[in-house]
Amino acid sequence: MDIFNDAVGAITKQISGLWPQPTEKPQLVNGKLRPCPGTPNCVSSENNNPLFHVAPITFNTTPESAWVTLKQIIIEQRGTIQDEGKEYIWSTFTVPLFGFIDDVEFRLSATEKMIHVRSSSRLGISDLGVNRGRVEQLRTLFHKASDNH
Image 1 (cartoon, rainbow, N blue to C red):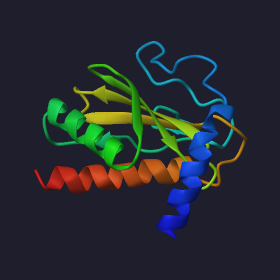
Image 2: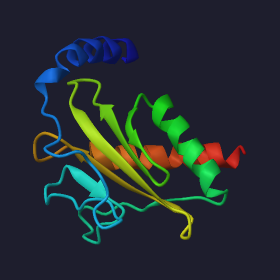
Image 3: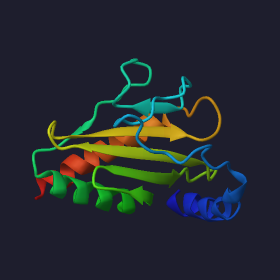
């Protein structure tokens, strides 16, 4: 199945220019991740609505080490870091089968020892749980990697 997904992903990546770009460059708003737009294709750890809420990624290492680990996981999971700062990352992930592009943002909160996350589809209304699943997978991989350090 991976070969099929890789082949379809390669083809759809070629036409991904057809998918919309974000209406504005993702960034922090008043020091926090942007709110979800109200459609079920977005989740965020900084959203109190249970329909859109996911838990943040917690860490017990130094903030610098946690940030390095997160960036490695983004790359390993075929994400692309579009913009990066000391406490903010905007990355994109391509959904393998159709080539849809999702925006995934992270905000480091060193004092809380957590990384807030927002994952949102650019198209459609429902994502069939893809963004929530992605965040949960990233969290699991982050904690596995952190346990090995």
